[in-house]
Length: 244
Image (cartoon, rainbow, N blue to C red; front, side, top):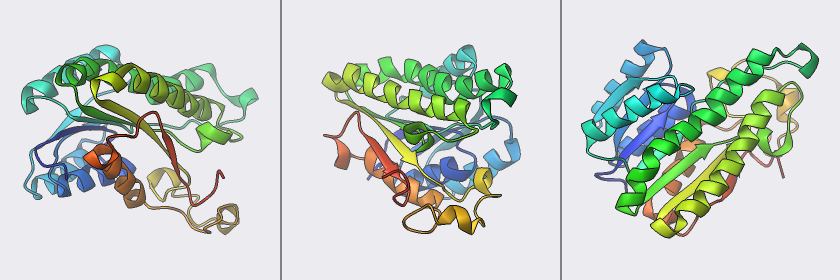
């Protein structure tokens, strides 16, 4: 489905990002995996990808640093010969109610989750525009669609991703490049580990269960493939009905 394509996945060493890397690799894509700090985990994920018979490299990169992003993206294009798919998955949380939320905590979440995606798109934009093809997938959140107490920074950053998605989609639509967003609900990952056994929380989800990283990865695969060539500017919830 993605044979011969090159995909960049930020936050690709674990959780949803790693699941997307593996799903793409299983379908023939070469993977450039970006990670923030856990080198061991990144190398483990890279080793799994290489076992699938594709080219894979791990690059340490703070997506909130525009210069680092520019340098790494240039290196990826050099190493892989181009880029066909970008998945902006890197994200952090620093939850607190607004009176207790420190300004640097608001800034750092927006810098990583929103500005990081912008920096990545800025680098692949001319490449995809020139080749007149490409898929950009931004991982937003239902928190960005409906808000969440204690997550003013996270919700704002994820809502910003929705606006960014639609603007990029309109800019690149005439060049054969699609840009869409995925809005996961509660997904069982390291980030939600302390929540996954909370049955009261599951009561709010119509399907009464958390999703899996693989659920998100399957949707990402569809959006990265030619099966979604006429879909752009869309935000697709994958939340068991939570944000209906």
